Image (cartoon, rainbow, N blue to C red; front, side, top):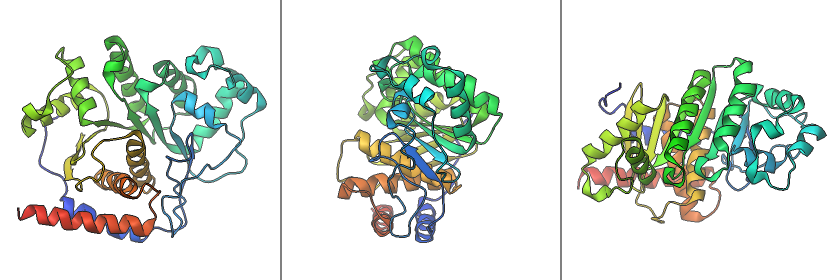
Length: 331
């Protein structure tokens, strides 16, 4: 069991580090294949737009990843040779993808082509588990028949549970066990917002999942997050809210105050843009606090403009954030 140590990094140093990192973005990097062109960051990092959202290859149907509950796939290098066979595409081209089961769609061609795809990638962000029918079945099939045989240990998996109260308790227990198994083949980051985290804690400990956060002290909230972290075999737990983000990991504890939000409500677009920025940090092999800072920057800049932020907009956002953070120290 892990206990909470002192803050691993100063938030101000994280922001200053991000300014330097984003300022040095070049035209080299990985590429995201995404099931939604509006919500995936491309690691191609064009100087004018380090968060250029794009589809890398139209030969892999967007619906294929969407039905699998995979938000994007980060390839180690762009390739024009990536193409799924007609057998794989046609086998997955059912009218009702909402009821996919792994044993119904699995065949040797699909396993081989998925293996070739995942052999050349490192970062795999999954979509909202609570929204994907049979996500547990599909992800476990993917793990057992595709990821395990590759014998790779350097994957970066990003899981987003969503609202756990939308599923039955035994289903929540099952997906937590599956997520723990993914940790044997790479580093797992579990991302939740504060309300989802409180609901999960309630389900895990037999308490009312509708917890009033305002009635809890910050120490009680942290203790509940830490209890979740100690329940699931993962490397990182990231819990974010409209005013802060917290990291719990085996190596460090980190908290950072967010900018005063323009939009109070957390939307799916903002969640996706946070995960996209976080994934871009993983592509760049940044420390996790810097990945979190980049995720907040991308989602914050996106929320303010409603558009994909370019390099200059990201830098301007961090400058404003740093000013607010410094001002809060004197209040």
